[in-house]
Length: 134
Length: 134
DNA sequence: AATTCGTATGCATAATTATGCATATAATCA
DNA sequence: TGATTATATGCATAATTATGCATACGAATT
Image 1 (cartoon, chains in turn orange, purple, cyan, blue):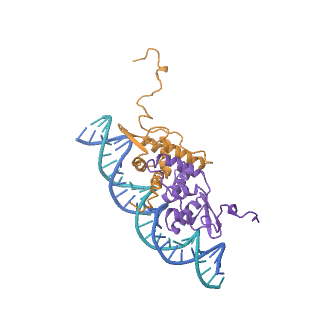
Image 2: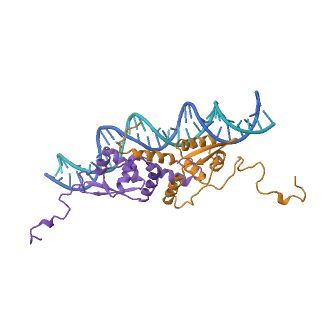
Image 3: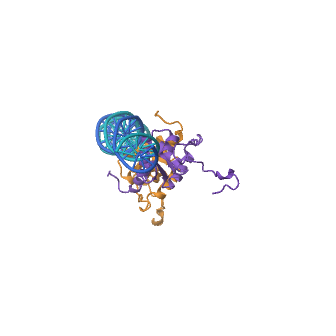
């Protein structure tokens, strides 16, 4: 433990938390997760960083309790565990990033079952020749 | 300039800003300044850190445009230049620092003229003998 | 102009954080 | 079981940040 003027305990906790957020890739990850659960391959497809790198950043956020992971077969899906964080990031982008059009992510799909379900989810029966059911 | 996936420009700006805040002493300084202008000796008295150290942290905040300084005789007074920051810190302390009683600073006075005016500022004419005006 | 007071800078060093990459692990499938 | 897919870890190194301290600087006072 470091030296600390005692009174700054609260401020230290706050600073430690901010440090978790003070990273471009981690911010981007949180923004993506704010739209819902996502697997690592999604993040990889969205952000274009190598998988081990993203896993490391995810580990940082995970160890800070900001996100949680859930395994489903081959994929691991991450979820925002502390939705407040988004408020904070919104407050932030309210006065930073004024000009840039909040630039993020055109949606991209990856290889996970969520993006590539084993069979289409939209009804495909519509164009089937009559009497072709089975 | 570092490598950056282009799309993360906004996130990088936000992260850089958060880095300025992600420090216990700097957070404490901002909290103190949120109550109004303060000279370095005030901060020194409040926080108990050596003056050169505080000057350095002030320089960080200053170079980030978060605070500004004004000289008045011997003292330099710092002011919050970007009051939004307080919103951000409030949002933060809303879910960090739940138990600790938001612990900061019992007021302390220092040697600057604001704390030790050359003569009392509270009206002193009230007890003057009648007819003593001028 | 010399001194004093309040504040800022420069610099060296200790710590921490960021990144890249090789490799380990878990779950699945053939 | 062996191969394959998705993800996590370990570790080495590059960068950045944090701190402590000596000292410089500007304004005011003598």
